[in-house]
Length: 352
Image (cartoon, rainbow, N blue to C red; front, side):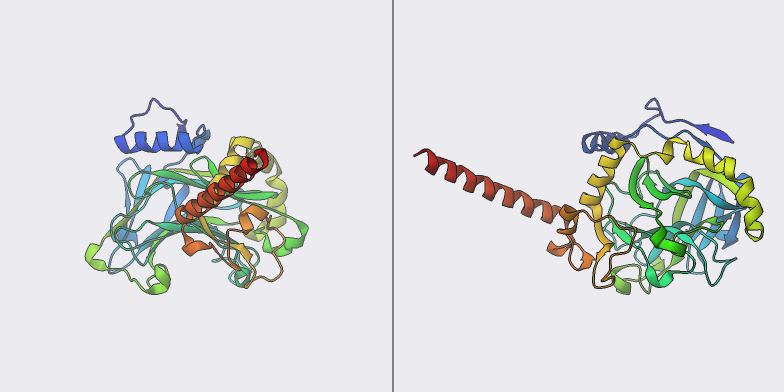
């Protein structure tokens, strides 16, 4: 295992320098988490598409390929009763329509009818259009009550590696990109079994989702551009390995590990990180189930509704103004300028 510490002394490419300065100005840069990385064989096993799973010579990174014959994937060698699951990932480039790269936890292989799940799903696009992604969670087989949020990114995920992480504790769930929290779900009693509670494995996959991934299935995977390659490195599994069949015994055995997990730097969202999360959601979230009143006339109990955020979304949970944050920002600025001009004219008339 290796120790991973963030340092600006690492060699930076021109693109990463550009990203660093952009992140600094946007408030999206924080000290890297103190993490212990694993080699592939220390924590993971091939899941499917063995020939399309390519380990690096040192065993600390892996490539997952999709070609005309099959996708590929890997799974953690153990299941975990809560934990922190993380990897640096680089996505395929150019034409990626119809492709899904997923990084998620699940226990669907063990609890087929009442499984739990926490998802990052990256959705490919036609050439020249950016990758998008969604997060989701299910508890106790509640797949009919999906809790999706969909976003764009402030960088090109096919150019550089970025860290994607899921923290799952008894109290809350946090999705991170690098050290920026982008979504938090706080457990409450009203959620009941919809909050994931059973041991889960970590999965990473690439697969053909032509039927829905890009523009509702309008654009399919074009295997002329194959193989499509996603890369994973600096893998992290921190939690309590457990046997799902011996649930009560493991709950007791894992209590110390749970306390340790909740003491880690990634378990606490600082005021600065919370502000960055709000900025991310204001700028890059384009769908939220919390604002989808057509689908959920009664707001799900874990949703925290911000009036200023809600007014930017339609009843369908999608952004107003055609789904463009930039367009929306221009409209907002124009409104502010108009209000400023009206106020200025009013003041001038009062002074006369």
